[in-house]
Image 1: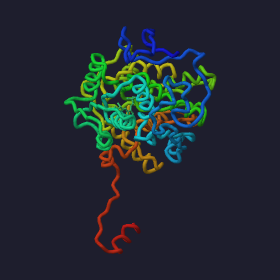
Image 2: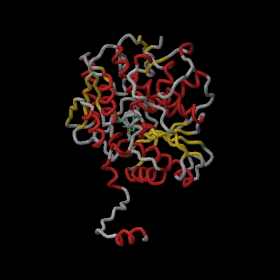
Image 3: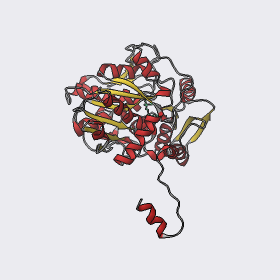
Image 4: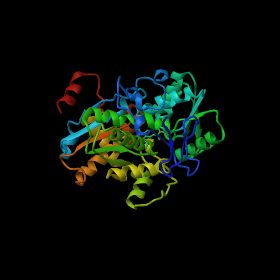
Length: 397
Ligand code: F0G
């Protein structure tokens, strides 16, 4: 049987209990399989294709067909940066429009297995949307705790449409996470499905399995980093594939934060063993506006083990990459997702990523979630009168 493992201090325990954090050192727990438990027999499509390496019962899965997202070959961004083999893994094509669904299908399945009637999360928006929709699918109650006034419109609409209870806090995401962590510690009536829940990580690791099945092992994978669950999951998936003998080399990871919310980047460049949390993170990429990321230690470990780096990008670079993705590739993503491509552009410009490298940039959320951010793009809107000649003058310009 797989068991809980603390990668920081080595604590282990059985999956019979519902644990999130290590009772000894406080780090989020991981689910560990020994080598005889890892099986490389995959069948079906999407997240549940990998059910042999998921710690829940596939037959009882609460699923909306998550995963199996498109991996596009870049047609223009790669070329313009000189890197011929850039691929974009579009996680915005998941059922609720973000990668969270990979983890949520597994976490909600676990909640049902354990008999919970309520699930809970803190969120910058996408986890809330995903929780709400999957709770609706499962027929249980969803509670989402969000920073008041700091969540993109589309995400709030999804949570509300799904009938979730929306609790707004006067503070940022870090405060919301602290509140739900305290609640989950002291009350056992709602299952916490933030990425500090190790079952979430299990679902999210399947993105690594998909990439490897699609194109083998790239030289680099770039990924946006907020609370740092997703980079942890990606690295876990890659490690399992190596242990399974499916792959014999590892990619380097480029974890990208927004410069107004980049405590993990700062710890990386300072070669620090501790994290200096930010009390007032700020970025246009509201999904990753996080000052005290829960999985910072595992993110640093992943990047360092891979021989990769943490980077930060400015809001201007994020918006530029977002507009490039939509206008030059036909891939409309939300700002946090574009951080991944902005990080790629800087790294290839600086020669860190070389021209012959195979690169996968993971884009994490759909652009429709955050319509306001488009206000920063070039604007080609023109108002004309009612006659055809006015239209002719626009088209012939
Ligand atoms: N990209 C998007 C679109 C996100 O919504 C998030 C996180 C990330 C990247 C970063 O992933 O936190 O695992 O490092 N969103 C969380 C939420 C915090 O509440 O929806 P991470």
